[in-house]
Structure formats: structure tokens, C-alpha cells
Image (cartoon, rainbow, N blue to C red; front, top):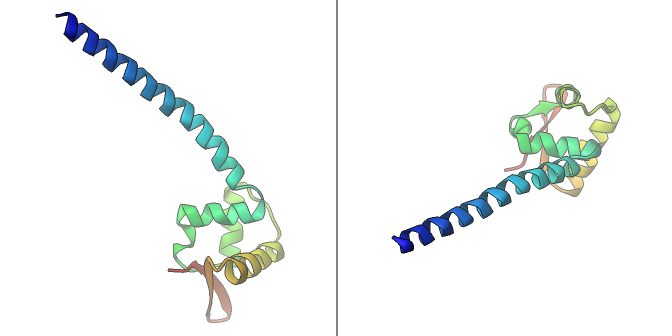
Length: 108
């Protein structure tokens, strides 16, 4: 009987450690996530991670989605960041022409 009580106490201690780690880890993760998505490039990264750019999107569509997520930047700033940073430098996105409009999509 004493051995069973000891095992139960050990399990309770382990469970408490796991719960403490998980709950304190979530708070830390939220802070890290918000810092990872700072600025215009962070907003675009957020859209990429969210899967928004898995299908080709125009700059205007990206502008509107960024506004929904409370990133308020100019059309020219967004176009420049998409073209220079995410297409040419980091090679995360592809730029394709559909009709008269350029669209951006995640490289596979």
C-alpha cells in the first residue's frame, strides 16, 4: 500500500511539472510569435505561415489581408518588400504574371 501511495505522489509531481512547463511555455511562445512578425516583412511572413500565399495572390489581395491582420502599409512598400526581400533575396516566393497582374505564391 505504501508503494502505491509513493507511485501516485511521483505521478502527481511529474504531472505538475508538465503542466507548469506547458502553461508557462505558451506564454513565452506567444511573446516570441508576436516578435517574429514585426513590421512589414513580419506581416508577410505571418501570411506565409498562415498559408495565405499557398495560392497566387496579387499585391492588392496581400494588402487587404495585411490590413485585416492590422498591418497598415502602402501598396508600393508591400510590392517592393515582396519583390526584393521575398522573391529575389530570400527566394521564398515566386512572382508569376497572370494576364496583366503579377501574383506571388510560395515556392515549392
